[in-house]
Image (cartoon, rainbow, N blue to C red; front, side, top):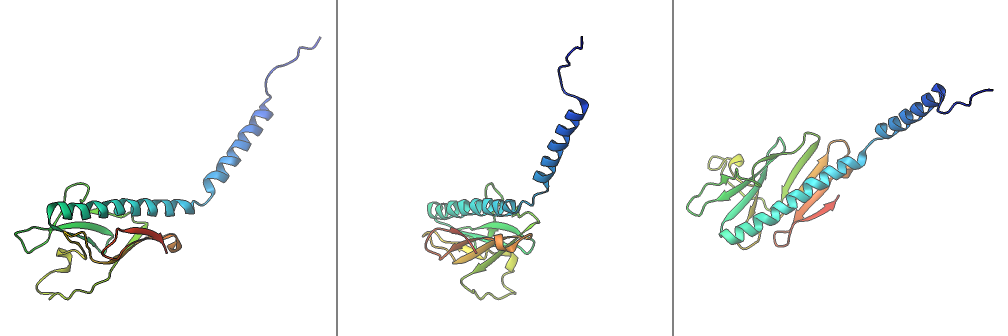
Length: 169
């Protein structure tokens, strides 16, 4: 009498492992274009919250605060002391300087063209956007652009009077 075997054969096990490997390969090889937009949106949301906080802080402390972007993608926050004439960079959290990931570009356009004597004030020692104590600010447009696909850029805008809004270009 033949004994009936219970279990899987080696061939059946290898077929299952092959199917799982093919499915994992397809899943991991799929381009993740949504990931670039998600990260840009997260950075924009973070900045939107910081802009809101700095506007409130300017109102509460009766001081002027500023924001600037360096050529290397680092953005900085500034404060103008009541007694001083020179802007001071803020180093405390959450307003410490922040370097954008290398795979993203950040571009800042302001609505006002201020004229400063280049001998008087170095452009790197002052902000491009100023938040005043009456909740007004310099109008600006800040673009966060993934290097992989510029169509996935996220824009932060303010007309100087209303809150900062996030949109897609």
